[in-house]
Length: 242
Image (cartoon, rainbow, N blue to C red):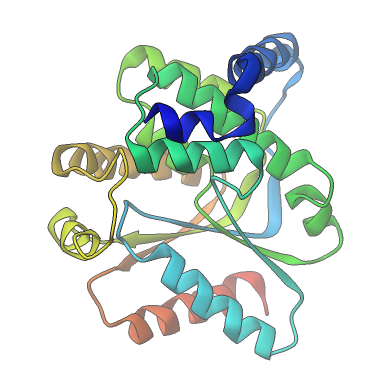
């Protein structure tokens, strides 16, 4: 595990610790400036527990919309940037950091993703449709495993804008585990008890999101992929007027 971590540039010379502390300081200095939540038009997020099928469905929707001539951006979190890449390596290797460290890392990656050059805000401002595989709802569901970390994660993510739509692939834990069993490697969260707790927290997270003005499509993830795709596409056509 140490080899995986040390292969990432952020790990050397204490840069990982510096990244976490820098974001922590930035967050603490800016938290009082936030007011309300912005909802970004045509920002669509696909959510679900590991193995639910978010990546598959995002790809199908993206191909269909591109075929109709829409300009869109396919993206994901963790991202493929330096912080996101490090997160993926840690999760894949089972490298265990305190929950607070993961919370800061995900928030730092998200900050670059949303507010960075050519990020979500810029793309939406240009009129593009943004399709994102996981967003802040994943952080709230996966990282809020105690009262302390839940408060931290909520605080860290309060400044980020909300998507106009969340597509939630509601897939039973046992089915997700069956799908995950065929993958060559498991990550830190791919365990039955963990996923059951995450699925429960997702419901609460999405209820809060809806109360804030967001739209959610709950889809039965056990249906054939093409049926799921058609259901999602009809919902987006109606909701985004495309």
